[in-house]
Image 1: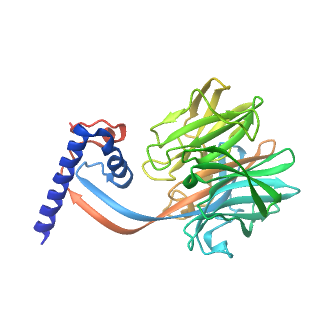
Image 2: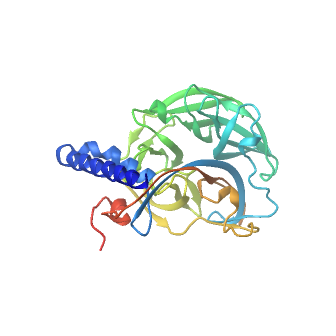
Image 3: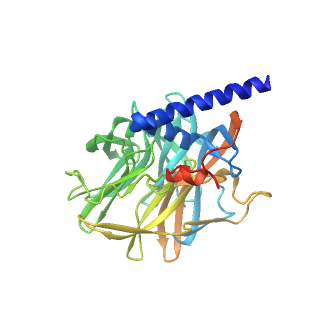
Length: 373
């Protein structure tokens, strides 16, 4: 039986390889999707001899960290992380919570975040409150649409609160305005349309409005930049856009743009080899309506924990990384941040095939094919 399974597996592999080679010769564009699937769902082990596909259940929850600066944050023992989990959601059946954004208004902290609704299989936007930023109480769902919502970037402008949640499935970037903060929101305008705008991040700088948006969220990663003179537009794509193309490690926004020590910083998700690995920081060196330049602050942000379970390097609730960082300065040398921690559980190992892989992991990542030396 084992020999038959191996033979059938080899036949499938050779047929698949022949199909891909034929497509590459006669219709190169047709192999893009299979290669994306290969990149996303197959882990190439260091031995170069085994391919393993494992289906995993991902769980996100939300925690709080503090620090003396925005790049070095600590999970203290005084903080009972995670502060918000799916179990705290009592008005819908939730599978996880993620993408937190905080606002401080009249001595109260408000945290808006995605609630993944098990029933609708869409994300809704929920809110929690806190008096000190450390202990949180879930309140309710504040925005629910017939389509998926996430990444509720909340901001204030001219004494009003606005939100641009992700609505990529609608191929629109929609603006909502609060009519009774924090609970009631109404659709205000569509700022951009025609692409899958994911995790869009809006900010003002130098007398203009800017938006970073990932426009290839299920592909190789593409970050576009737009600008406008007014919040409602018209919005124009920047001459340097897309500023990132073909790099899932740095393309997708991971929270608000940070203003610190007269400098501007972009926060990015690291989504390769798996979604929600880490967050990376880029200092924006030049930003005008005509020019853009940035460089990475390597190995930042740095997250610490005062108490970690025996046998672990990281608290279990964020053992497999995080992909959102929302930073707020409380005072001189005093910062608070909310993040969403990822924890993955293997629920089934579906395929293990052993054979000599005719290409290296490095060549797959860079898109070049070569036999191992």
